[in-house]
Image (tube, rainbow, N blue to C red):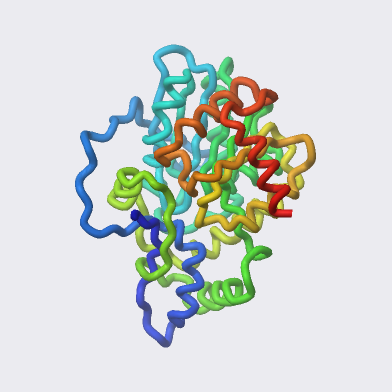
Length: 342
């Protein structure tokens, strides 16, 4: 079984307690993977169809990988990765989207991959502003294509804030894949207190290995790829974890103001965003607005799962017609799941 593991380093006892560091693992579980000996991947990884960079108003360059269809795209997808991941996050699901006639642009967000400030938290406002600018550039570049803003985990949280602030281009659609909404309101007192102590006593300490383990996907090769990718961040500063939790607070608070055309995806085997946190956020969404979809057998990184085909088919169908039922029935499953939680 492949485990997506929080990486907790040992630190001097007089700086921060190990007990506090273990609690910080609630956020650091998104940091990356460590694995024992594993066979090499079968065959070469698909080369990107295009490389480039988005230039931000302050001059920062955010590198991207793009996967492009042969003809003019029906839709163009700005795909934002999760915490400590990178633009490589989309190499597994992107081919299915390009086969459907969609273009996919996956950038490194500021502080991750090869973007400026690697390893340091840029701040929620900066990350939301970056997303708004990249969306604006793609809307300008593809004026006849549907603009889709897709975010996985942390990327989904960034886009929830973007939508609530009304900073997305007109007509943009949102696909939020297991958005990171585990804010302080749904953490227990021990986790909140330990994070506060660790981030105030030793914000620069990095966490990079330890006992917090979760399974992020059943796709062994994808998790091996993530763990060995040179762009993956493996040692996470505690102040970056605090920044992630701040972002999750903001995303959860943004739910009542999410009036955009959106599709929220969540898996029944997600071990990173607790069911209670996702349920609380879904219940705050305005009625009659965003669609929700529940996949009982999906993990946190569901677009990399072995069963991703049905999920991606739902995404494609929804982008083409947001009012039609999802082919897999995940929208009905979401209503049943939410009613059962009640």
